[in-house]
Length: 105
Image (cartoon, rainbow, N blue to C red; front, side, top):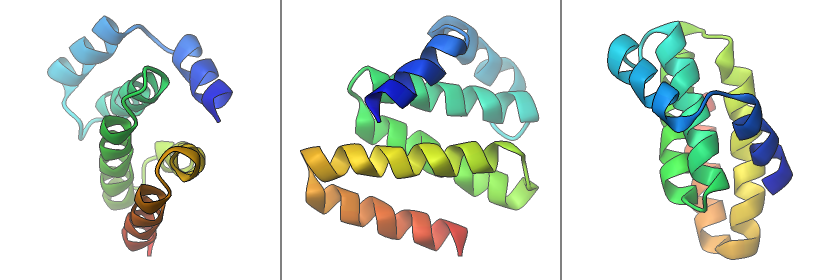
């Protein structure tokens, strides 16, 4: 799962570009939502899984309302993040799984 986030982060823009896009476009725009997803992958890659999970949940929440194409990528990333939590903090994995289910259904 870590390799998945490493690949996503390495193929995306750097953190400064992501932050600038979020400031300029906001999270509701297509560019901003994509930047928020990229920020989540960067956070997770750098060991900030909780912050990354919050960002992914926000992406899923906005994508659900706007039917944005990033939704599928965010779902896939969230499932992989849960796998990381199952190794590090199983109780948190259960909580995140529940949050994701509530968000999607």
